Amino acid sequence: MTKKKKVPWFWTWVIGSVVFRLILLYFPKNLNLSSRPEVSTPLTSLRRLAEGYWLKQSSVSPYAGSMYHGSPLLLTLLGPLTVKRIEGQPDHLLCSLVFVIADVVSAMLICAAGEKLQVAYSSSLQLLGLRDLSENSERLPSGDFAALVYLWNPFTIVACVGLSTSAIENLMVVLSLYGACSQVAYCYIQLAY
Image 1 (cartoon, helix red, strand yellow):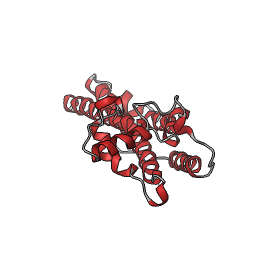
Image 2 (spheres, helix red, strand yellow):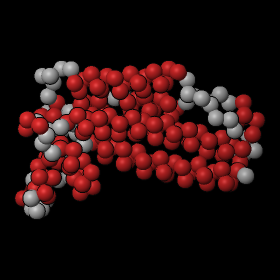
Image 3 (cartoon, one colour):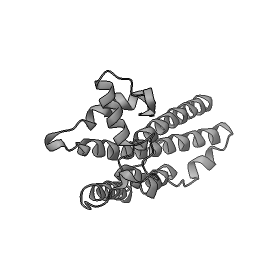
């Protein structure tokens, strides 16, 4: 089976979504989405993550007293990025770039999972003896569309711009789904041959 190259419009839309996020992150100075309860909850708040990391550095459990509700893994990985830098301002540049990268990696995993499911579909058609149907069928790149829907979803954009840790949590969920799709595709390919 030949692998199709991505069409240029796909990469144009991916790069456009990254540029759009970066513009929203750095140019409107009065856009403070991190304080909105629809975007940043006690579970996904970067501010709570910074407080939890400070408590952890002070040898106090961040989970005592209900100060921090997030994952210990997020506390360990993203906590150092929330430390105050020069002039007492938190360095949200690195956190926001991590969130943008997490969204793009999630979209690429969605795209790859779609390709794997298309391979599994083709293999299942061959397993059923419908080889001609699988070779002659024109398939839409559903993984590409799903990835673009994820990248241009208003809530994912607002969560990324609002410095919510849900971008990292979404990445972990999509990574799990990608692993499951890989196993399904592998099983169908093994059955077909």
